[in-house]
Image 1: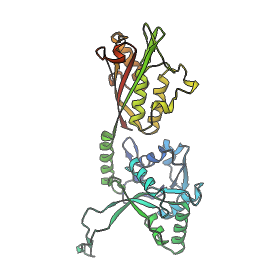
Image 2 (image 1 turned 60 degrees about the vertical axis):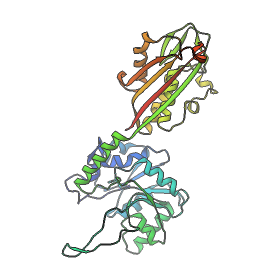
Image 3 (image 1 turned 120 degrees about the vertical axis):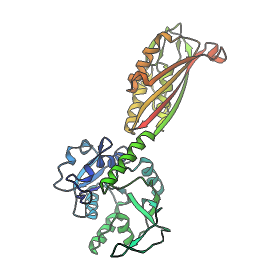
Image 4 (image 1 turned 135 degrees about the vertical axis):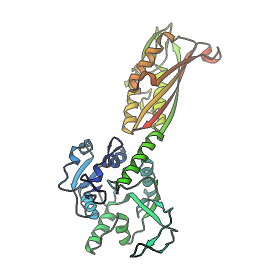
Length: 381
């Protein structure tokens, strides 16, 4: 990540990559989708040798972040950062602008997927939508170039490490300064692929750009939502209680289960994992594993919450439904809501609990077992 520039066009006494944005800074936002991705083995951030701000940021202490002294030009910084990474020539490297804080995980995923088997590499870009005008020396329109086939280059740009090293070295030897990595690869004879990216992946150059980025991030935070649902069922068996939402409920029978058989928390765990696209409870806690014999199901919810946090999600609310003829839960409703809320890290008001029967129909109506359904709403953090 080249970040050694002074940002003269932005103005002010603070480099643009350190301007506050959405509760953090521009550079922290730019780094976020990569550090949240387990496929990223490391990030080299190329900084001015006199930079005293980066080391004050929490992200500077991330185990996968390395500080590198950059150069006078972007291409110099990229070359120096690339040299610091423990990569082989066949490894993929991505170059991303520190001043592009609005890149999305979806765009990064698309770039990686489309270029996985493309030896030339490529870059995120968007087709030009506006009419272009070429100005003359007097600031008047000289002509209107055709925009057909023209794209706006974005980052990240993705190339094999060996190809990018060779392209930058060749440009340096020829005394040429590429404006981006793709141009250096083009000069080497490569034909990078254009991968359609979101037009909101803007580069902060002026104060107006920063305001636009803030609006994009604020709007995205409100709209980047996920819904998940979960369902679980257990048959009744010998015992004197059942666990519901982490609360021990007296009962004339227990449940047959590998863990503690908490149907509410099992359904909730599946809903959390499903909303984030992280599989299901059986993948993470197989009933064939003796470690989970009689386990407190609150551990399952907490594990799911740790995974959500690592992938940039938090819980907005949860709606739980118990389906059973017995036990009755009215006297325990508040305790269950409080227990679930504590496991989710939300207020009790964000957890709703309902109970219903099947009007004596089916195995639930015959009091052979109990079931639960959960629906959760997540938002991107």
